[in-house]
Every structure is written in structure tokens, then in C-alpha cells.
Length: 410
Ligand SMILES: *Cc1c(COP(=O)(O)O)cnc(C)c1O
Image (cartoon, rainbow, N blue to C red):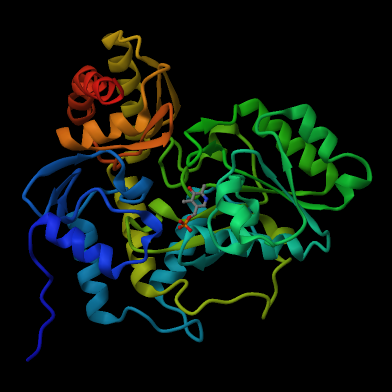
């Protein structure tokens, strides 16, 4: 019997092979990881790391969670894919559970995809069905890298080399109610189908919209007959201390996009449409996908929702935020300027002269996985199962990591 054994070797050897075999879009990865357990991962040289990034807010249950392992083992033994000519029990059950935790009204519905960017594509098609040609997105927004979603993403360096992209995208300053009011008024407003917003801009450095802005955005879009689409790909599934960030603002959007944390690392995404009027915009034949909604990913999603609920991880995320904030405050290190974000999506602001990439590099050397989301911000998005002890250990080490980072610049 032939068997494909995973390659082994030292980290240096493996990274050399990576450079030869993989397209260079990500640059050279920081480490070759071989396994994980809970909030820890190990590299090919046997070093251990505390994972405070969770594969960018994806591994909600950490690594190798026993319930997820058991559910996936069982599902693999049944089937992993059947196509959308058929449905499966995990698919139906996950859609129902999502609508339930979202508090979605009667007539709401779910379309499953395989990624965040595909969920945005589905939202773009939903918006197109209103018959209005334009979509508004925010400055600083990140909505994905496919050429439709990329048109909504703000960063010029991501977009410009690949233009022309999807036309008809207008941009509003993030958090500016007056600018939004102007963009949605008069004949300009009449051409807008949807406003797409992240409740907290994750990729551009953990920048939260304040609750009042989200409420006004809801009022203004409703008044203008414009769909409010909230991109909860990073903020959804308990990450911010609520099932969804929109619930923290006490509003009901017209649609949300999901992905990252939904299935604990198995690729999945979703568009959830709220209410029968919005749901009715996409009809039979309007959209499709081969892999989207497959039983493996849906079973994983169902298990994530079960464990998050059973173990109280939504509230736990809120408690860990308070814990982290008070520990950082107690540290009293003036090189740390602020903590932004909510729940377990947190941005740690750095004083001038401290470079986030240097801090992230020093952290990795010291055994912590974090991310430099912005030159002046470290992003933490740990598994929702992270403990106060684990967060505290990182905070206690921060002064030393900042010293190391300062030496790199000096
Ligand atoms: C990650 C992310 C996306 C893109 O998701 P992919 O799965 O990488 O395509 C879109 N929007 C937000 C807010 C994200 O954080």
C-alpha cells in the first residue's frame, strides 16, 4: 500500500522547500507548524508557542478540540460532500442554529460558501438584485481578495494592480455619520443598493465603529431603502463577547457575512439574509457553489456552535477582554497607548517609535503568536477558550518584548 507520509526535516530545510514550491504571495512564513493542542502550537524544531491569533480569529475552539475531532472523525466516516443537488442533516441544522443565535426574524435564510470573500460575493449579488447599481464601503475596509470583494476593500496596494475591478463602489469615511448622511441622500442615495460595513475593522488594525454610528447607519440606510450589510466574518460567532457584533449595537441588519470562526478552522462561509423581503431578492438559479454547505464543514460549524454555547464561550470572551484590559492597565507601561476592540478581538496600541512588526517578531521568538495588524498595533484574536492565565503570561512578558523590539530599531 502506498502512503503519503508528511514530510519531515528541520525548519530551515522545510522553508527552503516552501520557497521552491509555493507561490510567493505570502512571503516566507514565520515557522513550519506541525501540531497544536488547545491554545498551543509546536513547530518543526520542537518549539512551543502560545497561539494568541488562532489562525486570524478562525480556531475558535483552539487546536485539536476533542469535541471537534470526534465530530469530524464521525462525519468523515459518513460522507464529506454530496453537492447541492442534495441536502444533509448537518447543513439544515447549522442553518437553523445560525438563524437562532442571530435572533433572525421569520423569513431569514442562510447561503453557505467556503470563505469570507465568497460570502461577500454573495452579498454583492444580493445587492445587485435590488436593481440599484452602486455599493458603498468604508475607508479602511477589508472584505476579501477576489475581484468583486476586492473592489470593496479599501487598501490601494491590494486593489490598484488588479483594476479594473467590480465597478460602482463608492467609499465613505468609517464612523462619520454626516458623510454617510450625505452619501445616502438625494439622487446619489437612490442609486445605492447596499452599505457594507465591518462592526470592527479587523485587518486595518482593530478599529471599532462606535455603537451610535452603527445605529445611525441602520436608520439612514432604512430611510434610503438601502441594504445594511454587516461583514461579521471576523467579529461573528462569539468573538466580540456577543454572538454577533451587531447585537452589541442593538440593531438588526439586512444581511451579515460570516466565515473565519464559524467552523473552527474547516473552511466555510455564510451569507445570512434577514427577513423575507431581503431573502426574496435571491431566487432559484441566482447563485450557486459546489463545495459550499458540504456536510463536513457544516458538521464542524454545528460543533463549534454547540461547544461555544455549552461552555459559555461568548460570555467568556467578554470576561477575557476585561481581564486583558485590567492587566495591561496594571502594567502601567507608557509604551502601550490603548486597547481597542471588543471581546477577544483586541488591538494593542504602541507608542511612537515602537514598530508592531518588531514586537510581533520578538513575541514569536519568545513563544507567542500575535499579529502586527498595523505599524502601531498588535492584534490579538486568540481561541475563545484562552484562559486568564495564558493572557496574563503574555501581558507579563510584554515589557521584555517591547525592550527587544526597541533594540531592533535602535
Ligand atoms: C478575513 C476577512 C475577509 C476575507 O475572508 P477570506 O476567508 O480570507 O476570504 C473578509 N472580511 C473580513 C472582515 C475579514 O476579516
